[in-house]
Amino acid sequence: MKAGAATGRISGTGPLFWAVTGLLLLLVAFPLAFIILQAIFPEIGHASLARPFSGMVAALGDWKLLGMARNTVALGIMVMAGAALLAIPLGVFRVLFRLPLGRFWDLCFLVPFMIPPYIATLGWIMTLQPRGYLQQLTGINGAGFLFSIPGVAFVMVLSTFPVVYFAVSRTLEAVGQRYGDVARVFGASPLRAFWRITLPLATPGLAASLLLVFAMAIEEYGTPAALGRRAGFDVLVTGVDNRISDWPIDLSGAAVLSLLLVGLSLIAFFTQLRILSRRNYETTGGKPQAIERRPLGLWTVPVLLFFAFAAFIACAVPLLAILATALQRTLSGGLAFGNFGLQNFTEIWSQGSDGLTALMSSLSLGVSTALITGLLGALASYFVVRGTGRGRVLLDALSVLPNALPGVVVAVGLILAWNQPWLPVSPYNTPFILLIAYCCILLPFPVRYANAAFRQIGTSLESAARVAGAGPVVTLRRILGPLVAPSMVSAMLLVFAVASRELVASILVAPVGMTTVATFIWRQFEQGSVGLGMAMAFTAILITTALPLIVLIAMRRTRMVL
Image (cartoon, rainbow, N blue to C red; front, side, top):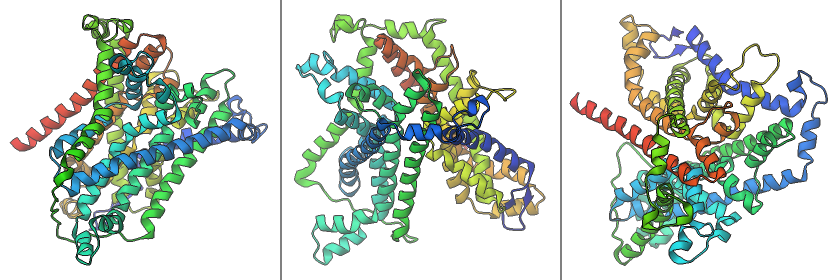
């Protein structure tokens, strides 16, 4: 790693650069390569390249594949449209008008991020199923709606719409009202000014968030698996799971379906780039724009009711359903006061219980994943942002590639890559395979945070350090590291929260005898011990929400003291 002359840039040729590149190749490229090889050579697991493309022809010739692909795209579009219909009005009212309790609503819409989609889905099942909580309280049976295609989309919209809400609100805040006010001066109505001026200027944030919602929808496993199968609605994610979990095992078919998923994710990614490259959306100069929020007037009560309804169905219903189920002694006893108790929580926390073991396993995996991805992401971003050699292009591609790899694809790739008979040592069927899967899936979070942090730091500090005799490693450790540390800690806390509750990779690649929080909840629900599973879900939500908050508060107080 050689320093660039007075530019603050480095030449990516040193051993540390190649060590980071090698780790990313092993972590990201290696499993993806074996998915491609398995799709082309169905016998590669037996160290044979016979019958190339025969598995691909068989998979693509399966009439069910067309239906799964169509269902996947349709589900993504439905969830994207539903999230837009719910989140865009919420974001507009939040930013452009004087909305009472604005920060409270922001906090409410953060809650769906704290609840993993599969846990929220289980909460909705407990609410709307026959003799569910809705029927016990009102006599209405919502099972017909829940276990249907619109029901699947409805539950997924409630998990994803905050992505659009926060993107729209922040983008509109940056755009301001100046251009809309000019249009109104020239005679445009408020609605026309918003529709023709303000909303188009918010296209970058809106397009990015909607396409992210589409990608999240086609990659989600828990909701289609829990609801879609009962409605006869199979998607590519559940199709991959069926080919790996059900006999006869069809690894080649699973690889082909995985590549189709990757292709759909890449289409969403490049569509976003095309939208952003067609027009110029620059609206901000060097001076920040203050937003004069308009009064809601007669619309105050209806808008507040709209926000309250969105917060109730997205936050309160799943959380209350989870807690109510966790506190019930027996499900048959229903919502009766005498049927509530803490025995499910007691069983989870009892010494030597399966629940406590699963919780400790997930927490340790979450911490390890956060530390590894934080360090690896920071180093990769450092070489990409500050590097000058051709190798940084490869490193940049490797660090971005996991964005297009759904969790189920990563799991399939790891199964195929690390089950090869010629490997002398393999992490498969050990806890390390889960750690590798989590790191690959969650690496984009630290990379994004680190890229933004490094780009905000000028090169003058590095140049001054090198003039004083400090090498690149010392400069990174003593100057850049402390400056990007707050951003990296935030990214690592997010990684910890997500890794501690990850579902699809845990189900597919967890070693025999090892249970995580996600697999414990999923299996308890399948086995009928729903109360125990919901107690674990509520415990996991509390822990993975409280620990990051405690760390962030401690960091803020430390900075205040300093």
